[in-house]
Image (cartoon, rainbow, N blue to C red; front, side):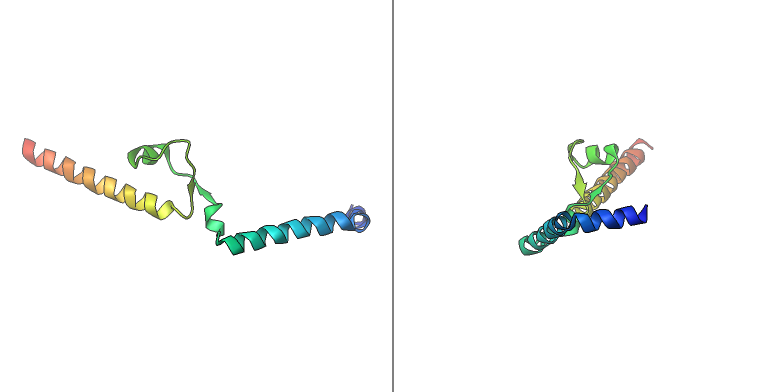
Length: 92
C-alpha cells in the first residue's frame, strides 16, 4: 500500500508540485492581506446566547469576534441580574 502511494506520487510529481504551489500561494496571500487564521475558525455559540446578544442565528462567529460576543453576554447577564434583583426587592 505504501509502495503504491510512493509510486503514485513519483508518477504525478507535477500534481504534487501544483498542489504545494497553491498551498504556498494561499498562505502568502493570507499573510500579505493581514488575514489571520482566527478569522477562519468558527466557534459554536449556543442559540440562546446568540438571541440574547442580537446575533442572527445563521451567522457564524469566528474566533476573532468571540471576545466581543463574550463581553456582550456578560453585559446581558449583569443587566438582567440587576433587573431581577431590583424586582425582587420591590416586591418584598
